[in-house]
Figure (cartoon, rainbow, N blue to C red):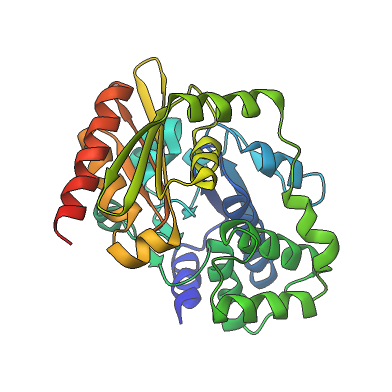
Length: 330
């Protein structure tokens, strides 16, 4: 009974304000899981004030979804006044950027809900840490909380969780049987799949198109065994560029970007690469790469990200070295 652990913490503190926090540039899974989780808390504790905050804003797609869902995101959440702080779809406080120090200074207990591998440093400071890499998304985890408490989500909550799951499974390509069962139940709760799914499609703007094309033009290709590894760099849209390079034929795409001293790196690989090699991009590549860059890295088996300090060239070289080391042990 995982959700009851959370309720126990709220009861022990007689909590009045709970602040839910998402990672920087929060994606639809982060935003939608926070919204549904807030709804569940309010259903059980109507007197509770619940605030959703995102470090340094939300993604362009998430902003688009706010037109169709009544989600209020605070860019300056009241972390200092919070009785309890909950991280959703966020496994390290470093992913909170400017809010990280406030979390460290806060006396409020920290609760983590995430479908990524738990980070050791986060486990040390968290009062409750609920993580499960076997589920598709944080939205799917939140849906299990609804089922645990025998509460049916309302139409907007169901739509939000449907969208978060669809986003993180790449429109159900990565869905397993439990995910598809959850989707069927959310549709039964009132989601019109044919109308809702297209909300995740945005027309690509000019700057994203240019970033993708530049990344492809700059890509350096390496053949390691049967695998094609592509490394590139652009100043923005690294994740989109990595997906584009993979769609062109790379088994692994790594795209870095630099803003002043900060380095951001997005990593993507095919399901075939992960299945045959057993390499988990978040755990095996992004995590040690983040440590090398004096920052943090993590993510899924086939999609991960790194934030750190240094330069693009050094980050990409280290990433290639890590991949070579892992592949040489096959």
